Structure formats: C-alpha cells, structure tokens
Length: 535
Image 1: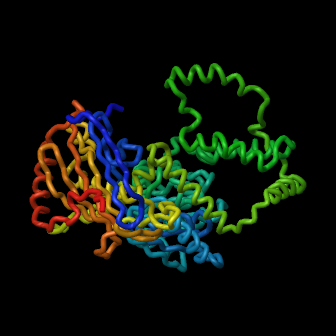
Image 2: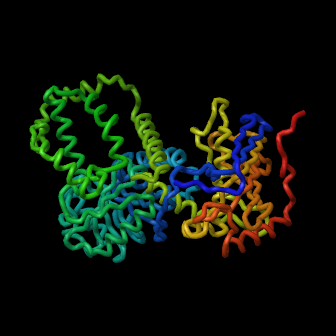
Image 3: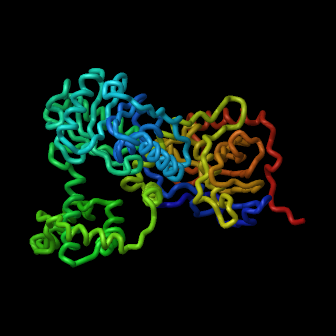
C-alpha cells in the first residue's frame, strides 16, 4: 500500500501523559507517512445490507437450536411467537437470550435495534398466524416434523415463508404433506445460532426459486451468511464434512491411537483455526495451484490413513472409554460457564476475522454496517453532530479498572469517520477523489469511563478550507453533559491519484462548507488550540 505524501517534509510523534485525569495526548504527522486515524485494519468494501426486514416470526420448537434462533431474531428487533409444549422450554430460551445479550455486547459496540418481543403461543396455529416467517426447530424425527410443517402450512398466510432447521433431512420429504409446498425450504443453522453465521438453504422438489432468494435476503439481514445448497442431498454440505472428521476422530480413540484430549488438541491448535479463514480448496495460484497441489498430495488420498466410511460400533465399552477420557480432563465448569467461555472465544475469533475482512468476520462487518446505517441520525440541525452511542466492553479496561487511553482515541477516530460519511465521503469518492488524513491530534482526559457505560461523541467542525478540516470532539456518557474526554484534530485532504494534498471536490466540499458555517454559530470550545503547559 502506497502512503500519502504531504507538502511538509518531516514527521514527529509525541505521546505525553497517560490516562490520569487531565492528561493530554499530542500527535503530529508530516511527510511520507500514513496520517490516517486509528481505524480497523480492514478497509475493504462491505456490501450494503439487505433492506428487507421481518416484524414477527413463528418459532416451532425452543430447544438448543430453537432457543438460538429466538435470540438471534429478538436481538435483531424481530418479535417471536414460540410454541413448544415441553416443560421448561421458555426458561431455556430465556437463558439463551441472556447468553446472546452478553455475547453481543462483547461482539459489537454499535447500538442494536430495540429488542423484539418474545411471547408464548399455545398452538401451532397461534404461533404462525400473521407472521412473515415460520422457523421449525423440532427434534430430528421425520414424522414429527412433517406433522408440524403440515399444520403450519394450513394455518399460516399463503405468502408466509416456512423453513426447517433440520440438520440432514431432505426438504422433499418434509414438504410432502404441506399446503403450498413451494414456499418451504430447509434453513439449517449451527449452534449457537445467535453466534455462528452460516445457514444452509436447501429447497425441495416443489420449492420455488423465489423462496430461496427471499430466505437468503432475510437471513442476510439478520447478520448471517446464507449458503444455497445447489442440489438436494442428505446432510447438506457442512454436516457431511463434519461427519467425515467425526468418524475418523472416533476411530482414532477406538483403536487407541489417540485420546479424546489429543484429538481435540490436534484440531483446535492447527487446521481448526485455519478453517475459520479458508476452506480446503483455497489454494494459492488459482487453477494452476490447485493442479500442482493435487498432483503432489492427491495420491496420498489412496493411502490407508483413515477410515472415512466405516464407523466403530458404539458399544458400552467404547462409550465408557469416551466418557472416562472426557472426565479425565478435569474440567469442573458448569454448563453455563462452558457456554459463556465458548461464546467469548467465538467473539474474539469473529472480531479478529472482522478486522481482516476474512470469512465469518466479513459477515459481522456487514451486520454492523446495517446497524450503523440504522443509527445514522446524527444531526438535529442546530447543534454539534451527535454520534450513535456505544457501550464500553469489559476488554477495553486497563489495570486501573477504567477504559484504556487508546480507546478514547479510537472513539474520536470513529467519530471523524462518521463525519466523513455524513458529508458524502464513501468508497466511490475515496477511489475517485481521495480522503482526509489526520495530521495532528490533541487528546484531553477529563474523566473516566467504565465497562458497561454508554458513551457518545459530539463533533463540531471548527473550520473547513480547500484542503484542511479542523474538528473538535467531546466524549460524554449518554444523557450526561459532563465531558469525559475531548479531542482536537486537524486533517488534510489527500488526492487518490497523486497521494498529495489536494482540494476537496464536488458535493463533499459543499456539504463541508455548509456544516462549518452552521457550526461557526456554536460556542467555540475553551480548549481549542491548547497544548501542554509547564507550570
């Protein structure tokens, strides 16, 4: 990546003070240096999120999968009508919803939509009447699912999409007794549904192509990655791959070639991490690379290394061995702790992948863009721009128990990015005309933020000339006027082609000048132009 070249000829960076009250940070950059703000590492394109949305979903089954669906729907602002006659079903769903809230607070700081309402339906008909989508998540029994889906198809409106969460049953078998089977398809998720983005979509013999298209749009709007299975097949795609590895893992333990712990470690410390980034066919060099790879490694597939189709008998002795080795790990965590630890790991992995724009992380970035667009009401016409509030996550804390100093700079940086989007600097403008780069920052610490605080940045444009943009940010707790921190920034507009400073162009220039004129009527912040003073 080439770096912008400015008219000045040197660079200096100074960080003075810490996160103590009243501390000040001063950063200045000139010369051949990327003077951009501290932004996420990934600056690639994110596709615009689907605008089709749901109001109400009928959920048939509230077990592990159904509860995960309920959490994903509710936290994305969709009302859920749950029908599950099993004792304690609603309590289990409420626990999954609590887990999902906790995980989402760690996954994103952007404001989620108002939560949907979770209500209990006493019958299938009550659950599916007046909804846009029916999600069936009953136990994996063909007769039970056929019965539920047939009842749902008779009671739901003709245009209602009906989906099954089955992990392997063919949709043609499930839709045989349904009214209007053309609106039915499989939407197979993965546990926990509220965290893992993949949903496999598979139509049956009588499924209309439009139903698959509509379903893909809906699930994409929920922050998921829909994968359409091209041909109806038992187990779809992901489970067939999973089961091949699972069979071999069982044989390794059965034949005393490895323990449960050793098999788990072999996966989670090696290709388990790799597979989160790339699948088995992502090989460097395109077709030529694939050909060379298969010529080198393909013959080994005929070697007797594994037992891909044979499955060991699940005898009592073998099950005892599996159970004993699992106990030997010495893990004493309860089920809730295990679930939360699992979710924390998914959050960390997804955030890391999001920063690089890879795999499931791109799905998170797409979902966040939708959240950001939904909260893009930042201008009331008379005061400073009010950025969408963000909740402070626990992993932003330093050793003193409050938000680390670098995070204040990140919040101000994000506010400047939101200002740029507000005046029209989008991906097209960046590639055609250029963008602003920060060349000087003053950061003032006046208070403290803690985990769980909701903070908001107020941004005032102090000046906008041909090449320069002068802004001032104030960070407060939401609904609190007392500043926690302030930041003054000077930015220079850099041409996309020459990589040198250049005037702002077109409508962006007009909107900036209009905003600067409007903000000139506001009181000038007291700390504008302040620097470190020696007493």
